[in-house]
Amino acid sequence: MNDTPEVVLSATAVTKRYAGVTALDAVDFEVRPGEVHCLVGENGAGKSTLIKAITGAITPDSGTIRFVGHDITRANMRTRRDLGLAVIYQDLQLVPQLSVAENIFLGSELKSGSRLLDKRTMNARAQELLDSLGVSFPVTARVGELGISLQQLTATARAISRDSRVLIMDEPSAVLSGRELDVLFGVVNRLTERGIGIIYISHRLEEIFRIGDRVTVLRDGRYIGTSNVAETDQPALIRQMVGRDVTAYVNDSIDAPKGDEVLRLEQVGRKGALYDISLSVRAGEVVGIAGLVGAGRTELARVIMGLDRLDTGQIYLDGKPVKISDASNAVRQGIALVPEDRRAEGLVSMLSVEQNACLSVIATMSPFWLVNYRAMHEKVGEVIQAMAVKAANVKNAVSGLSGGNQQKVVLAKCLSSECKLLIMDEPTVGIDVGAKKEIYNLIGQLKAQGLAVIVISSELPEILAVSDRILVMSAGRLRGEVDPRNTTQAEILELAIPPMSAIIEEAA
Image 1 (cartoon, helix red, strand yellow):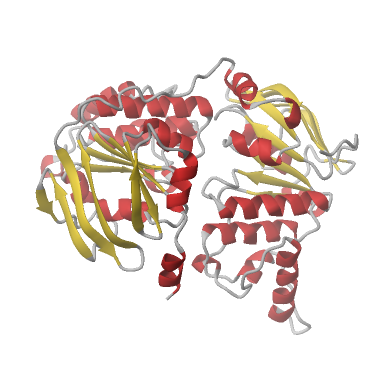
Image 2 (cartoon, one colour; image 1 turned 180 degrees about the vertical axis):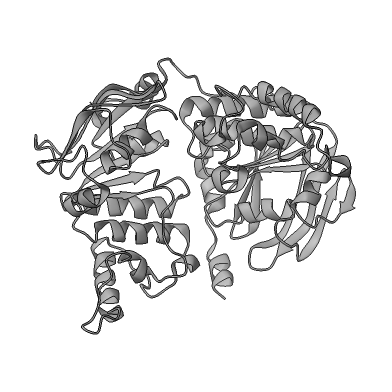
């Protein structure tokens, strides 16, 4: 742990208000060279607003922000970047058509005397940056052809290419697991060894105790406190974040009787992604699907939903063979999907809460192309209320809601279609600990109402908490089924790690 009193970045009494709402209320925060300072809090706690104030995306109403000896409270973003402040957002902001090297130097391209891009030098320096991070992959590869972990490493190399003094990492592990997390944490360690201060934002509290030096908690826009990670624990952080004790979710209905079979897959396959998948889900049952990133879990959800073509096998609904041609057809047949990326795939950010929740029922409530708005809004309003969506006004844009409430709107949209099978892909990614508990309770309520539910999650405690049965996928195949009552995370991981034969097959 870094014990130096030197401070490279400080925010003092930073306050920001929006239309009478105080997003930040005299918040203090600081970063020392070579430390990992974690920033935690529930959605809506003020983390994003504080980061926007530090990076210059917004100007605080009052307070002072200093960086490497300069007052940057009202400095523009370019000035801050030139001083050595870098940020890696959850949306990595890469150009998929460009190479790794071209993305690293995007906006600060190296040119030869003829004013043409000096690609040879860019490639060489990009390789040096990757070497400094302890990783290696082709700098000439197109970013769009890389996996998410390599894309993130590309964004990290870009961030440190300008001699950064402080690097902000916003939910860097949200879509990573297993070996990818080890690589990320190794990179973080290398950066701090070079004296770079890291602001690390994550909802995965266990990560804080693995790599953090200090942790600051915000709640309702207020500064709650800063602790040395070695001197606190997870329950204490949760109490600070939510202002109360949050008990673990307990699936106390795991032995409840199940209804008839809703979904059955027989030897389903999709070239290069899925191989010989057979499973079933019954009414009133939650089937969890575990596996590492790239195991084929999202691909399976997309095939069931009709978003990707089925190459082999058969899908059955209520015991009858069906052909699902596209997502609209899936909805008509009673299937709904809560996608992994709710912002890009589950919501239309410019539309209101109410309009988003209506999206799945517009077609069915629009005979002869005339929309029955009154009936539609009444129906959707009931679902929004049942989901306990916290919104000042359902007419306001959904983008103004916290992550947990946005996820509830996606759920409301799905349930408005009166689905019988609900697929939830990473249902709590980017959601704080209090909102997670609410989502788990909602899953339990839907199960009690007789809905068939598939939950895909990278968080093993989550999959163990909500599932009646857990299917483990690896390299596009089902590797086994476990009972959450008598299994462990280690046993699930053992099944999830691809055998060497599968790796060789995939490479071929």
